[in-house]
Image (cartoon, rainbow, N blue to C red):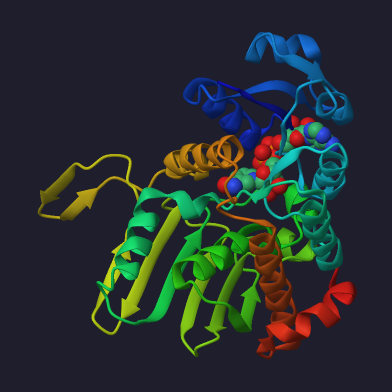
Length: 343
Ligand SMILES: NC(=O)c1ccc[n+]([C@@H]2O[C@H](COP(=O)([O-])OP(=O)(O)OC[C@H]3O[C@@H](n4cnc5c(N)ncnc54)[C@H](O)[C@@H]3O)[C@@H](O)[C@H]2O)c1
């Protein structure tokens, strides 16, 4: 059996999750090389074993036998690394977003297509078992015609302000997952975006040019809606809920809790808090997305989340920013014209 050999770029929070998942769970693939300019080789080998390591991404990408490149670096480096992988004929998995410029994102999607290279985006939430079950129930007609999707997506706390400054902003960094989820659940394209945003958590976020609280309404091509609410800080933990309302019923996906003990007493009914953050809340989704990525490479299948999905979510994020700035609903068709100004 051929083993898919992967070069991993970036061994930070998400890179560590993918490295562990691939090398412990999937005999059909292996991360054989890692590049990270901020690690030294000795520490890397102590932490992660005897894999090829370089501070130079290109050295890992061009190592003989590499089939695919997995990009888990800060967003500002994604485009350069995607391009390097494509030019060396490697398949690509990239964390979101591909780039903060829409033109560059479109260019990369086209480049991958023309090179015959597979490109997958890390929209892992699609592969959460509960969200997948919701999608399946919709497809089976269990709630009739879907009319409204409500997504609640709140982080447990602010990331460092330096991270915020380089993130592309709340819509591009955080809500982009929810924009993709809305498209995935509905199976339709967005035509209009109306967003509002505030700084309620920390003034430093505003000083960094961003918001920490947002509300977005998406209108789909058949007139139906998604409503998304985002906050960078929910004091009770990582709040990730979904409600889908249809002509014949409703589906709710509630938070995953630390445990399922429920205490009833005279002061109320008490249960555990939601899981802390993405590492534990979405642990199963990361495993499943890797399974599908590897399966697409081994069996020459289409990627489950492709370049166009990345591009569409990025367009919606641009529209959201423009809508908030101008205080009006923005047609998605406007976005290709304004992307350069916004980048
Ligand atoms: N899908 C998800 O749930 C999810 C969750 C967190 C982060 N992300 C995305 O993953 C990416 C990384 O986020 P993170 O939180 O793991 O960041 P991080 O800061 O924890 O890790 C990034 C690592 O990349 C390294 N790096 C920087 N430039 C590099 C380069 N040119 N080549 C190789 N390595 C380089 C850094 O030294 C660092 O170790 C971001 O794009 C982020 O948006 C996705």
